[in-house]
Length: 487
Image 1 (cartoon, rainbow, N blue to C red):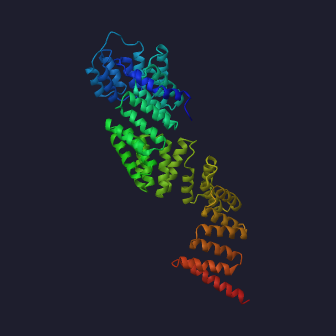
Image 2 (tube, rainbow, N blue to C red):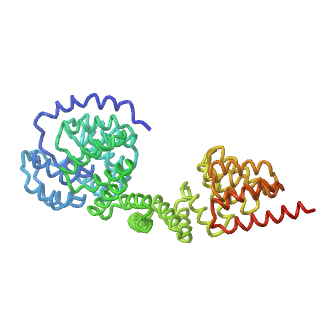
Image 3 (cartoon, rainbow, N blue to C red):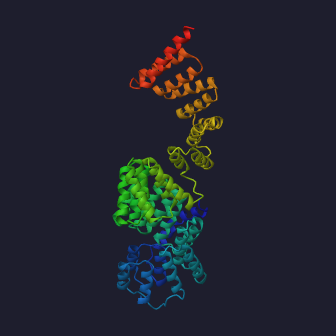
Protein backbone atom coordinates (compact mmCIF):
# COMPACT_ATOMS: atom_id res chain seq x y z
CA UNK A 1 0.00 0.00 0.00
CA UNK A 2 1.23 3.49 -0.86
CA UNK A 3 0.07 6.64 0.85
CA UNK A 4 -1.75 9.24 -1.18
CA UNK A 5 -0.15 11.33 -3.90
CA UNK A 6 -0.12 14.27 -1.50
CA UNK A 7 3.04 12.71 -0.11
CA UNK A 8 5.03 14.27 -2.94
CA UNK A 9 3.68 17.69 -1.96
CA UNK A 10 4.78 17.11 1.64
CA UNK A 11 8.35 16.42 0.55
CA UNK A 12 8.51 19.37 -1.83
CA UNK A 13 7.28 21.75 0.83
CA UNK A 14 9.88 20.62 3.36
CA UNK A 15 12.40 23.39 2.64
CA UNK A 16 9.72 26.07 2.70
CA UNK A 17 8.47 24.85 6.06
CA UNK A 18 12.02 24.92 7.39
CA UNK A 19 12.27 28.61 6.42
CA UNK A 20 9.02 29.41 8.21
CA UNK A 21 10.28 27.57 11.30
CA UNK A 22 13.34 29.80 11.50
CA UNK A 23 11.22 32.51 13.08
CA UNK A 24 11.09 32.76 16.88
CA UNK A 25 8.76 29.99 18.16
CA UNK A 26 5.83 30.98 20.34
CA UNK A 27 5.52 29.81 23.94
CA UNK A 28 3.73 26.51 24.57
CA UNK A 29 0.09 26.88 25.59
CA UNK A 30 -1.86 24.48 27.81
CA UNK A 31 -3.70 22.90 24.87
CA UNK A 32 -0.54 22.20 22.90
CA UNK A 33 1.25 20.55 25.80
CA UNK A 34 -1.71 18.30 26.58
CA UNK A 35 -2.21 17.41 22.90
CA UNK A 36 1.47 16.65 22.34
CA UNK A 37 1.44 14.46 25.42
CA UNK A 38 -1.59 12.63 24.00
CA UNK A 39 0.35 12.42 20.73
CA UNK A 40 3.15 10.46 22.36
CA UNK A 41 5.86 13.14 22.33
CA UNK A 42 8.38 12.00 24.91
CA UNK A 43 8.47 13.75 28.27
CA UNK A 44 12.16 14.52 27.70
CA UNK A 45 11.32 16.30 24.45
CA UNK A 46 8.38 18.15 26.02
CA UNK A 47 10.62 19.30 28.85
CA UNK A 48 13.08 20.58 26.25
CA UNK A 49 10.33 22.49 24.42
CA UNK A 50 9.20 24.07 27.69
CA UNK A 51 12.74 25.17 28.44
CA UNK A 52 13.29 26.55 24.94
CA UNK A 53 9.98 28.32 24.42
CA UNK A 54 8.55 29.00 27.84
CA UNK A 55 4.81 28.64 28.46
CA UNK A 56 1.77 30.82 27.82
CA UNK A 57 -0.14 29.84 30.95
CA UNK A 58 0.31 29.34 34.66
CA UNK A 59 -0.08 25.62 35.44
CA UNK A 60 -2.34 25.05 38.41
CA UNK A 61 -2.50 21.88 40.49
CA UNK A 62 -5.52 20.59 38.55
CA UNK A 63 -3.62 20.93 35.29
CA UNK A 64 -0.54 19.25 36.73
CA UNK A 65 -2.68 16.36 37.96
CA UNK A 66 -4.24 15.98 34.49
CA UNK A 67 -0.80 15.92 32.92
CA UNK A 68 0.36 13.30 35.41
CA UNK A 69 -2.70 11.09 34.73
CA UNK A 70 -1.79 11.17 31.02
CA UNK A 71 1.61 9.62 31.69
CA UNK A 72 3.82 12.56 32.61
CA UNK A 73 6.57 11.72 35.07
CA UNK A 74 8.19 13.81 37.76
CA UNK A 75 10.68 15.32 35.31
CA UNK A 76 7.96 16.90 33.16
CA UNK A 77 6.02 18.09 36.21
CA UNK A 78 9.16 19.79 37.49
CA UNK A 79 9.81 21.28 34.05
CA UNK A 80 6.29 22.73 34.08
CA UNK A 81 6.72 24.19 37.56
CA UNK A 82 10.01 25.84 36.63
CA UNK A 83 9.14 26.97 33.07
CA UNK A 84 9.21 30.66 32.20
CA UNK A 85 5.70 32.08 31.95
CA UNK A 86 5.89 34.26 28.84
CA UNK A 87 2.21 35.15 28.58
CA UNK A 88 -0.65 34.16 30.86
CA UNK A 89 -3.30 36.53 29.56
CA UNK A 90 -5.12 33.87 27.54
CA UNK A 91 -7.31 31.56 29.57
CA UNK A 92 -7.51 27.80 29.03
CA UNK A 93 -9.59 26.50 26.14
CA UNK A 94 -13.10 25.37 27.03
CA UNK A 95 -12.34 21.86 25.78
CA UNK A 96 -9.22 21.41 27.94
CA UNK A 97 -10.93 18.95 30.34
CA UNK A 98 -12.02 16.80 27.37
CA UNK A 99 -8.52 16.98 25.92
CA UNK A 100 -7.08 15.89 29.25
CA UNK A 101 -9.49 12.95 29.20
CA UNK A 102 -8.34 12.05 25.67
CA UNK A 103 -4.71 12.20 26.78
CA UNK A 104 -5.49 9.88 29.69
CA UNK A 105 -7.34 7.46 27.38
CA UNK A 106 -4.36 7.41 25.02
CA UNK A 107 -2.03 6.67 27.93
CA UNK A 108 -4.34 3.81 28.89
CA UNK A 109 -4.29 2.56 25.26
CA UNK A 110 -8.04 3.06 24.82
CA UNK A 111 -7.47 4.46 21.36
CA UNK A 112 -10.99 4.20 19.97
CA UNK A 113 -12.45 6.25 22.83
CA UNK A 114 -9.57 8.75 22.57
CA UNK A 115 -10.25 9.13 18.84
CA UNK A 116 -13.94 9.85 19.43
CA UNK A 117 -13.07 12.50 22.03
CA UNK A 118 -10.46 14.18 19.83
CA UNK A 119 -12.78 14.29 16.82
CA UNK A 120 -15.40 15.98 18.97
CA UNK A 121 -12.88 18.56 20.21
CA UNK A 122 -11.65 19.28 16.68
CA UNK A 123 -15.13 20.39 15.70
CA UNK A 124 -14.67 23.25 18.18
CA UNK A 125 -11.15 24.15 17.00
CA UNK A 126 -10.47 22.69 13.53
CA UNK A 127 -7.40 24.86 13.01
CA UNK A 128 -5.52 23.53 16.03
CA UNK A 129 -2.34 21.83 14.77
CA UNK A 130 -1.65 20.08 18.08
CA UNK A 131 -5.10 18.45 18.08
CA UNK A 132 -4.54 17.12 14.56
CA UNK A 133 -1.17 15.78 15.74
CA UNK A 134 -2.79 13.97 18.67
CA UNK A 135 -5.52 12.50 16.46
CA UNK A 136 -2.93 11.37 13.92
CA UNK A 137 -1.10 9.50 16.66
CA UNK A 138 -4.25 7.79 17.90
CA UNK A 139 -5.10 6.73 14.34
CA UNK A 140 -1.55 5.47 13.81
CA UNK A 141 -1.83 3.34 16.94
CA UNK A 142 -4.94 1.78 15.38
CA UNK A 143 -2.99 1.19 12.14
CA UNK A 144 -5.29 3.47 10.14
CA UNK A 145 -2.35 4.71 8.09
CA UNK A 146 -4.22 6.77 5.49
CA UNK A 147 -6.30 8.69 8.04
CA UNK A 148 -3.23 9.24 10.24
CA UNK A 149 -1.34 10.59 7.22
CA UNK A 150 -4.11 13.11 6.57
CA UNK A 151 -4.04 14.34 10.18
CA UNK A 152 -0.26 14.71 10.36
CA UNK A 153 -0.23 16.47 6.99
CA UNK A 154 -2.84 18.94 8.22
CA UNK A 155 -0.90 19.44 11.45
CA UNK A 156 2.26 20.18 9.46
CA UNK A 157 0.38 22.67 7.28
CA UNK A 158 -0.98 24.50 10.32
CA UNK A 159 2.29 24.40 12.28
CA UNK A 160 5.21 23.87 9.91
CA UNK A 161 7.97 24.18 12.49
CA UNK A 162 7.38 21.12 14.69
CA UNK A 163 9.93 18.41 13.78
CA UNK A 164 7.86 15.66 15.46
CA UNK A 165 5.15 16.03 12.81
CA UNK A 166 7.64 15.27 10.04
CA UNK A 167 9.07 12.39 12.03
CA UNK A 168 5.56 10.90 12.27
CA UNK A 169 5.08 11.31 8.54
CA UNK A 170 8.43 9.58 8.03
CA UNK A 171 7.22 6.68 10.18
CA UNK A 172 4.06 6.32 8.09
CA UNK A 173 6.10 6.20 4.89
CA UNK A 174 8.26 3.48 6.45
CA UNK A 175 5.15 1.45 7.22
CA UNK A 176 4.27 1.53 3.52
CA UNK A 177 7.86 0.69 2.43
CA UNK A 178 8.36 4.14 0.93
CA UNK A 179 11.91 4.66 2.12
CA UNK A 180 12.67 7.66 -0.10
CA UNK A 181 9.84 9.79 1.28
CA UNK A 182 10.58 8.60 4.82
CA UNK A 183 14.17 9.80 4.47
CA UNK A 184 13.01 13.13 3.04
CA UNK A 185 10.62 13.72 5.94
CA UNK A 186 13.24 12.74 8.52
CA UNK A 187 15.71 15.15 6.95
CA UNK A 188 13.09 17.90 7.05
CA UNK A 189 12.68 17.21 10.78
CA UNK A 190 16.46 17.42 11.22
CA UNK A 191 16.61 20.71 9.31
CA UNK A 192 14.17 22.07 11.89
CA UNK A 193 16.01 20.54 14.86
CA UNK A 194 19.48 19.13 14.04
CA UNK A 195 19.70 17.41 17.42
CA UNK A 196 16.32 15.67 17.32
CA UNK A 197 16.77 12.06 18.44
CA UNK A 198 13.43 10.87 17.06
CA UNK A 199 14.22 12.33 13.64
CA UNK A 200 17.49 10.36 13.53
CA UNK A 201 15.56 7.23 14.43
CA UNK A 202 13.12 7.85 11.58
CA UNK A 203 16.04 8.49 9.24
CA UNK A 204 17.36 5.08 10.24
CA UNK A 205 14.01 3.45 9.55
CA UNK A 206 13.94 5.09 6.11
CA UNK A 207 17.40 3.77 5.25
CA UNK A 208 16.41 0.33 6.57
CA UNK A 209 13.30 0.35 4.35
CA UNK A 210 15.62 0.93 1.38
CA UNK A 211 17.92 -1.90 2.45
CA UNK A 212 20.79 0.46 3.39
CA UNK A 213 21.66 -1.28 6.63
CA UNK A 214 24.94 0.48 7.43
CA UNK A 215 23.39 3.92 6.92
CA UNK A 216 20.44 2.89 9.09
CA UNK A 217 22.72 1.72 11.91
CA UNK A 218 24.67 4.97 11.75
CA UNK A 219 21.44 6.98 12.05
CA UNK A 220 20.35 4.87 15.05
CA UNK A 221 23.71 5.53 16.71
CA UNK A 222 23.21 9.27 16.18
CA UNK A 223 19.80 8.97 17.81
CA UNK A 224 21.28 7.14 20.81
CA UNK A 225 23.97 9.78 21.24
CA UNK A 226 21.15 12.23 21.93
CA UNK A 227 18.78 9.88 23.77
CA UNK A 228 20.81 6.91 25.03
CA UNK A 229 18.04 5.24 27.03
CA UNK A 230 15.60 4.73 24.15
CA UNK A 231 14.54 1.06 24.02
CA UNK A 232 12.76 1.57 20.69
CA UNK A 233 15.99 2.52 18.93
CA UNK A 234 17.78 -0.59 20.21
CA UNK A 235 14.79 -2.62 19.02
CA UNK A 236 15.04 -1.05 15.54
CA UNK A 237 18.78 -1.77 15.54
CA UNK A 238 18.01 -5.39 16.34
CA UNK A 239 15.69 -5.65 13.34
CA UNK A 240 18.25 -4.08 10.99
CA UNK A 241 21.10 -6.26 12.29
CA UNK A 242 18.96 -9.37 11.92
CA UNK A 243 18.05 -8.43 8.35
CA UNK A 244 21.74 -7.91 7.56
CA UNK A 245 22.54 -11.38 8.94
CA UNK A 246 24.39 -10.29 12.09
CA UNK A 247 22.39 -12.40 14.52
CA UNK A 248 24.71 -12.10 17.51
CA UNK A 249 24.70 -8.29 17.46
CA UNK A 250 20.93 -8.36 16.84
CA UNK A 251 20.48 -10.43 19.99
CA UNK A 252 22.61 -7.96 21.95
CA UNK A 253 20.50 -5.04 20.69
CA UNK A 254 17.27 -6.77 21.69
CA UNK A 255 18.70 -7.56 25.13
CA UNK A 256 19.57 -3.89 25.59
CA UNK A 257 16.02 -2.89 24.63
CA UNK A 258 14.68 -5.35 27.22
CA UNK A 259 17.11 -4.04 29.85
CA UNK A 260 15.74 -0.54 29.29
CA UNK A 261 12.11 -1.70 29.09
CA UNK A 262 11.46 -5.16 30.59
CA UNK A 263 7.81 -4.97 29.47
CA UNK A 264 8.80 -4.65 25.78
CA UNK A 265 7.14 -7.86 24.60
CA UNK A 266 8.06 -7.32 20.94
CA UNK A 267 11.74 -7.26 21.90
CA UNK A 268 11.34 -10.51 23.85
CA UNK A 269 9.58 -12.05 20.84
CA UNK A 270 12.18 -10.92 18.31
CA UNK A 271 15.02 -12.02 20.58
CA UNK A 272 13.35 -15.43 20.66
CA UNK A 273 13.35 -15.55 16.84
CA UNK A 274 17.06 -14.72 16.69
CA UNK A 275 17.90 -17.31 19.35
CA UNK A 276 15.87 -19.92 17.49
CA UNK A 277 17.85 -19.20 14.32
CA UNK A 278 21.04 -19.60 16.37
CA UNK A 279 19.78 -23.06 17.49
CA UNK A 280 19.59 -21.87 21.11
CA UNK A 281 16.10 -23.28 21.43
CA UNK A 282 15.81 -23.38 25.22
CA UNK A 283 16.70 -19.68 25.43
CA UNK A 284 14.28 -18.88 22.60
CA UNK A 285 11.46 -20.64 24.46
CA UNK A 286 12.22 -18.63 27.59
CA UNK A 287 11.93 -15.37 25.61
CA UNK A 288 8.71 -16.46 23.89
CA UNK A 289 7.22 -17.40 27.25
CA UNK A 290 8.02 -13.96 28.64
CA UNK A 291 6.53 -12.31 25.55
CA UNK A 292 3.42 -14.46 26.01
CA UNK A 293 3.16 -13.44 29.66
CA UNK A 294 3.35 -9.78 28.67
CA UNK A 295 1.05 -10.07 25.63
CA UNK A 296 -1.16 -13.15 26.12
CA UNK A 297 -3.46 -12.20 23.23
CA UNK A 298 -0.67 -11.89 20.66
CA UNK A 299 -1.08 -14.77 18.23
CA UNK A 300 2.38 -14.46 16.65
CA UNK A 301 4.05 -15.15 20.00
CA UNK A 302 2.07 -18.34 20.55
CA UNK A 303 2.85 -19.44 17.00
CA UNK A 304 6.58 -18.91 17.51
CA UNK A 305 6.48 -20.69 20.87
CA UNK A 306 4.77 -23.69 19.27
CA UNK A 307 7.41 -23.70 16.52
CA UNK A 308 10.21 -23.65 19.10
CA UNK A 309 8.65 -26.59 20.96
CA UNK A 310 8.64 -28.48 17.64
CA UNK A 311 12.33 -27.69 17.13
CA UNK A 312 13.02 -28.89 20.67
CA UNK A 313 11.16 -32.14 20.03
CA UNK A 314 8.58 -31.44 22.72
CA UNK A 315 5.66 -32.31 20.48
CA UNK A 316 3.04 -32.50 23.25
CA UNK A 317 3.85 -28.91 24.25
CA UNK A 318 3.80 -27.82 20.61
CA UNK A 319 0.37 -29.36 20.04
CA UNK A 320 -1.04 -27.81 23.23
CA UNK A 321 0.34 -24.35 22.37
CA UNK A 322 -0.95 -24.37 18.81
CA UNK A 323 -4.35 -25.71 19.84
CA UNK A 324 -4.62 -22.79 22.27
CA UNK A 325 -3.61 -20.45 19.45
CA UNK A 326 -6.34 -21.71 17.11
CA UNK A 327 -8.96 -21.54 19.85
CA UNK A 328 -7.95 -17.94 20.52
CA UNK A 329 -7.51 -16.94 16.86
CA UNK A 330 -9.44 -19.36 14.60
CA UNK A 331 -8.47 -17.44 11.47
CA UNK A 332 -4.73 -17.50 12.18
CA UNK A 333 -3.13 -18.88 9.04
CA UNK A 334 0.31 -19.96 10.21
CA UNK A 335 1.55 -22.88 12.26
CA UNK A 336 -0.42 -25.68 10.59
CA UNK A 337 2.75 -27.25 9.13
CA UNK A 338 4.37 -27.21 12.56
CA UNK A 339 1.26 -28.73 14.09
CA UNK A 340 1.31 -31.43 11.42
CA UNK A 341 4.97 -32.20 12.18
CA UNK A 342 4.12 -32.67 15.85
CA UNK A 343 1.10 -34.84 15.07
CA UNK A 344 3.12 -37.01 12.69
CA UNK A 345 5.74 -37.49 15.39
CA UNK A 346 2.88 -38.71 17.60
CA UNK A 347 1.73 -40.95 14.68
CA UNK A 348 -1.64 -39.25 14.54
CA UNK A 349 -1.60 -39.23 10.75
CA UNK A 350 -5.27 -38.37 10.07
CA UNK A 351 -5.02 -35.25 12.26
CA UNK A 352 -1.69 -34.35 10.60
CA UNK A 353 -3.29 -34.68 7.17
CA UNK A 354 -6.08 -32.30 8.20
CA UNK A 355 -3.50 -29.75 9.39
CA UNK A 356 -1.50 -30.06 6.17
CA UNK A 357 -4.61 -29.46 4.08
CA UNK A 358 -5.16 -26.30 6.14
CA UNK A 359 -1.58 -25.24 5.49
CA UNK A 360 -2.01 -25.78 1.74
CA UNK A 361 -5.27 -23.84 1.73
CA UNK A 362 -3.33 -20.83 3.00
CA UNK A 363 -0.24 -21.54 0.87
CA UNK A 364 -1.28 -23.42 -2.28
CA UNK A 365 2.20 -23.30 -3.83
CA UNK A 366 4.01 -24.56 -0.74
CA UNK A 367 6.19 -27.40 -2.04
CA UNK A 368 7.13 -28.61 1.44
CA UNK A 369 3.48 -28.77 2.53
CA UNK A 370 2.49 -30.82 -0.53
CA UNK A 371 5.50 -33.12 -0.02
CA UNK A 372 4.77 -33.79 3.66
CA UNK A 373 1.08 -34.31 2.88
CA UNK A 374 2.10 -36.87 0.27
CA UNK A 375 4.28 -38.60 2.85
CA UNK A 376 1.42 -38.67 5.38
CA UNK A 377 -0.99 -40.07 2.79
CA UNK A 378 1.51 -42.84 2.04
CA UNK A 379 1.56 -43.73 5.72
CA UNK A 380 -2.22 -44.25 5.75
CA UNK A 381 -2.16 -46.24 2.50
CA UNK A 382 -3.69 -43.59 0.20
CA UNK A 383 -1.13 -44.08 -2.54
CA UNK A 384 -2.90 -42.42 -5.48
CA UNK A 385 -3.69 -39.30 -3.40
CA UNK A 386 -0.10 -39.29 -2.23
CA UNK A 387 1.10 -39.45 -5.82
CA UNK A 388 -1.00 -36.41 -6.75
CA UNK A 389 0.37 -34.35 -3.87
CA UNK A 390 3.95 -35.36 -4.57
CA UNK A 391 3.62 -34.41 -8.24
CA UNK A 392 2.41 -30.99 -7.11
CA UNK A 393 5.37 -30.73 -4.75
CA UNK A 394 7.72 -31.42 -7.66
CA UNK A 395 5.92 -28.93 -9.88
CA UNK A 396 6.75 -26.22 -7.31
CA UNK A 397 10.21 -27.58 -6.39
CA UNK A 398 11.61 -29.89 -9.11
CA UNK A 399 14.92 -30.33 -7.32
CA UNK A 400 13.52 -31.91 -4.16
CA UNK A 401 15.17 -35.29 -3.68
CA UNK A 402 12.72 -36.15 -0.92
CA UNK A 403 9.71 -35.46 -3.14
CA UNK A 404 11.17 -37.70 -5.89
CA UNK A 405 11.83 -40.42 -3.30
CA UNK A 406 8.29 -40.40 -1.91
CA UNK A 407 6.79 -40.21 -5.40
CA UNK A 408 8.84 -43.25 -6.33
CA UNK A 409 7.52 -45.01 -3.23
CA UNK A 410 3.91 -44.14 -4.14
CA UNK A 411 4.43 -45.45 -7.68
CA UNK A 412 6.10 -48.62 -6.38
CA UNK A 413 3.17 -49.27 -4.04
CA UNK A 414 0.86 -48.98 -7.05
CA UNK A 415 3.13 -51.38 -9.00
CA UNK A 416 4.11 -48.71 -11.51
CA UNK A 417 7.60 -50.18 -11.53
CA UNK A 418 9.21 -48.45 -14.50
CA UNK A 419 8.08 -44.99 -13.37
CA UNK A 420 9.10 -45.81 -9.81
CA UNK A 421 12.60 -46.81 -10.95
CA UNK A 422 12.91 -43.59 -12.93
CA UNK A 423 12.00 -41.54 -9.85
CA UNK A 424 14.43 -43.48 -7.65
CA UNK A 425 17.18 -42.81 -10.22
CA UNK A 426 16.35 -39.09 -10.16
CA UNK A 427 16.52 -39.16 -6.36
CA UNK A 428 19.92 -40.81 -6.63
CA UNK A 429 21.12 -38.22 -9.15
CA UNK A 430 20.16 -35.42 -6.76
CA UNK A 431 21.52 -37.17 -3.65
CA UNK A 432 23.94 -40.04 -4.40
CA UNK A 433 23.77 -41.57 -0.91
CA UNK A 434 24.07 -45.18 0.17
CA UNK A 435 20.41 -45.17 1.25
CA UNK A 436 19.23 -44.04 -2.17
CA UNK A 437 21.26 -46.75 -3.89
CA UNK A 438 19.57 -49.20 -1.55
CA UNK A 439 16.06 -47.95 -2.36
CA UNK A 440 16.72 -48.18 -6.09
CA UNK A 441 18.00 -51.74 -5.55
CA UNK A 442 14.77 -52.66 -3.74
CA UNK A 443 12.73 -51.32 -6.66
CA UNK A 444 14.84 -53.23 -9.20
CA UNK A 445 14.44 -56.40 -7.17
CA UNK A 446 10.66 -55.98 -7.35
CA UNK A 447 11.10 -55.92 -11.15
CA UNK A 448 13.31 -59.06 -11.03
CA UNK A 449 16.20 -57.04 -12.46
CA UNK A 450 18.65 -58.75 -10.13
CA UNK A 451 22.04 -57.93 -11.71
CA UNK A 452 21.22 -54.21 -11.70
CA UNK A 453 19.94 -54.46 -8.15
CA UNK A 454 23.14 -56.24 -7.07
CA UNK A 455 25.28 -53.39 -8.45
CA UNK A 456 23.25 -50.87 -6.46
CA UNK A 457 23.59 -52.92 -3.24
CA UNK A 458 27.33 -53.27 -3.77
CA UNK A 459 27.61 -49.50 -4.13
CA UNK A 460 25.47 -48.93 -1.03
CA UNK A 461 27.65 -51.35 0.99
CA UNK A 462 30.83 -49.65 -0.23
CA UNK A 463 29.55 -46.15 0.63
CA UNK A 464 28.32 -47.19 4.08
CA UNK A 465 30.41 -50.21 5.19
CA UNK A 466 29.13 -49.83 8.75
CA UNK A 467 25.52 -50.46 7.66
CA UNK A 468 24.84 -54.19 8.22
CA UNK A 469 21.49 -54.08 6.36
CA UNK A 470 23.14 -53.46 2.99
CA UNK A 471 25.52 -56.42 3.33
CA UNK A 472 22.72 -58.72 4.47
CA UNK A 473 20.46 -57.75 1.56
CA UNK A 474 23.36 -58.19 -0.85
CA UNK A 475 24.00 -61.72 0.45
CA UNK A 476 20.29 -62.57 0.23
CA UNK A 477 20.17 -61.34 -3.36
CA UNK A 478 23.25 -63.38 -4.33
CA UNK A 479 21.61 -66.53 -2.89
CA UNK A 480 18.38 -65.71 -4.74
CA UNK A 481 20.24 -65.25 -8.01
CA UNK A 482 22.06 -68.57 -7.57
CA UNK A 483 18.82 -70.36 -6.75
CA UNK A 484 17.13 -68.85 -9.78
CA UNK A 485 20.03 -69.79 -12.05
CA UNK A 486 20.02 -73.44 -10.88
CA UNK A 487 16.40 -74.02 -11.87
